[in-house]
Amino acid sequence: MKVKLSKQTLLIAGVVCVALLIAWSATRSSATAQGPGRLDDAAGRACSDFAGGYGQARTKTARLALADKVSQSSRNSDNDAVRDQAMTLGRSAGDGGREWERDGDAFEEACRAAGWSAG
Image (tube, rainbow, N blue to C red; front, side):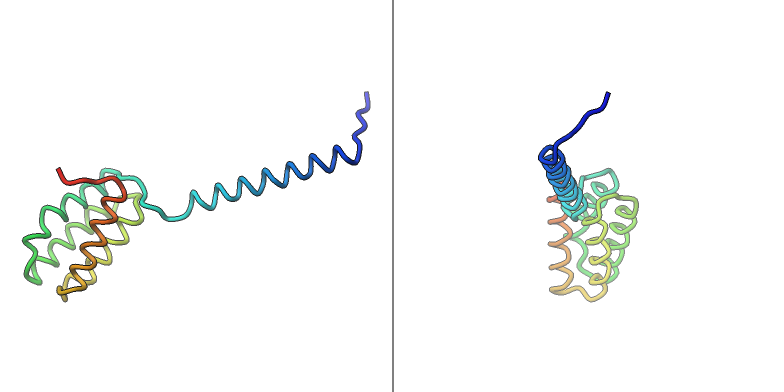
């Protein structure tokens, strides 16, 4: 039994295959783009650690201790945004000032974007 396909049928099948490949690759690239990520246990712990200590972290020693605690908590997280912001927070902890506040706000935003909330 031989099946003979016309050129038009082959052309349509080729176009459908190309369209499917384009749709698949677009889905893959949007899935790998860094978004807020999910709030896993490690990210949630880091966010809670930060929220619990940020108000009292007024001295360099306190800021460094808090940044270290947050970094340790986030180390095993699969959430890239929280983990990256924890590292950034650690870099500004020694100097404090506006950078520390800005990085603290960015860390808190990464936590909220992932679904964390105080409480």
